[in-house]
Length: 178
Image 1 (cartoon, rainbow, N blue to C red):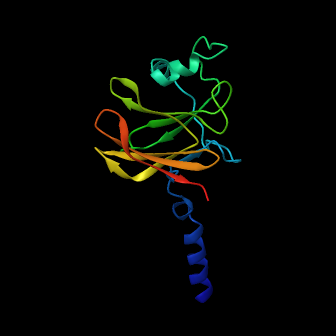
Image 2 (cartoon, one colour; image 1 turned 135 degrees about the vertical axis):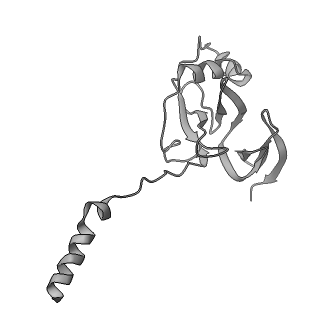
């Protein structure tokens, strides 16, 4: 009888129902740093034509294109993108980083956040910085953002909050590096 019970228990543990696993939601990457030796974007995604068009209309991107030599148009080359959920799991927002030629400078580069809206993609954040962190706090329904920049003698942390339309500076602190 004991053997029969053990066999039934083993079969129940090995049954297809027990073997099924629940789909796992991959956690969003919340820190993106150009100074890191690791990969900047852990789970890269491709930019759609509409997202590239939204970037090409952005003022910071136009400044980036107006270099010497000039970049004729935005193609996605040198850009890395990662999905981030700023409001909830059903929305697909993107962090886009100018992480390659011709965008990256001396441990700084351009960062953008693109929201996927019913009217199409829209750039709601832009900054040239060393690191971008997506914070747990939120304003107007979207998670707050922190940009970190550094020089040889100071580091600056700037927090941004969403004002309903775009991200604006909430507070900025510069401290000497010890």
